[in-house]
Image 1 (cartoon, rainbow, N blue to C red):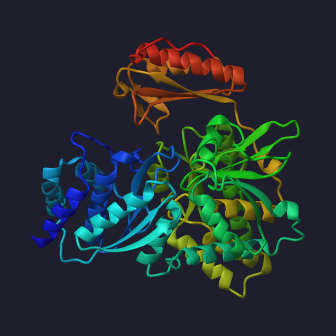
Image 2 (image 1 turned 45 degrees about the vertical axis):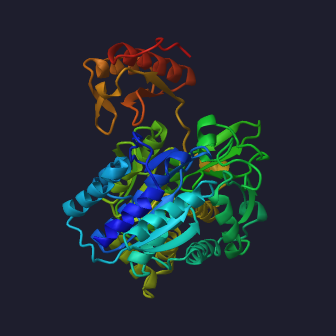
Length: 544
């Protein structure tokens, strides 16, 4: 087979270090960039096979998101812009770990198992972030695509959500939008301008937003987009990549974990600020209170703002569509209570991980999902989109209903439904605050987070912990759930759960209660129970 000769020749240029084993996880492959050259070449091969199998364009994104600058990684994107299907994650792992002389066997195994016709054309879109290693690594992906005779389009520097968007546009024959970066800017900015143009007397203060670009790709792209927004949003960009290191003391992950403003951002009291992560698929908001106290608005607050806005519009439009918010066990109890009791919105809880949330959100007419870390989006069913469109175009509808339908229609166009997108989510949040005439403080005051604490307990083997009910209860080891229950009973408005880490031998503990003191005490007591019943190693957890 001529094709495989070229794979052999090119593979020798991208050799695998002997004995190196990597795992395709939730975020694809991620590790130090020096260990990834062979993986990138092989993901180019796999993406080409996936394209032949699905008879559609597949995406490959070279990024390591919020990891340090010296790391890199790769994610595969399926035809509708979603993450690659789990069965192919297994192939990715097998292909990445095959020793040099076993590569062709591993490749042919995938071809046979999936009954792939090698005569089928293949098309792969490739994008990369701003890391120094991304140039040569994305070239290795392209080498892999070409080794199997695939067609490629190299988008160069794009955010992760932009590549997902391009793949979806291509495979819907342009129905979702135009598969260019300019097409992306045009679609989103037009929707944003349509949403905000009818807001009476918006002041410059209301249009001003501070953005921390994490010294990454998001900073470059939001700069390019700014001209399209025609001063309807006035951005002050910090950590734009001109001097600082990617994700170093900045970015959404840093702000969320450290609960403080990023380096280089000077906030005056009450100013709205947001941070992207390294590949711009997550966003968090924050502001400084009058006494200089830092206030974070995380994914729970974002989901609440957006779902409340959508629910109000559905009521005004008289549309009978079911809206749900999908959360994980990490969502603050106050947000769940507010959504269920006050807003009367359905709340569904799933296991941690974007693919679980995305999947659950697809079961509703409108599904809003955000992880607490700020990664999320809104999904509209085909039927919901059609109903909204029909009402917006119906000239017999009364003014209030039609206005609401038009707002909904532009909101659909502003949202990147393929994946969490910091730029799209930022524009959506800004539009909602403008339409509702809300300040960031008023948004923050919708509900007050219960004080909480997260801890980690080192264990000999994380697999001894087995959970059920979307990770909210443990079924093994014996006695652990009873121990957690008895400790939770001692505190007011308390809740706690434990779950094994996906990557290391630690058990993660979450606790919340009516005061920080109680949350800390509960987290410590549950940590002790885990240590004693689940084979803790090292020193026993100290009280906070």
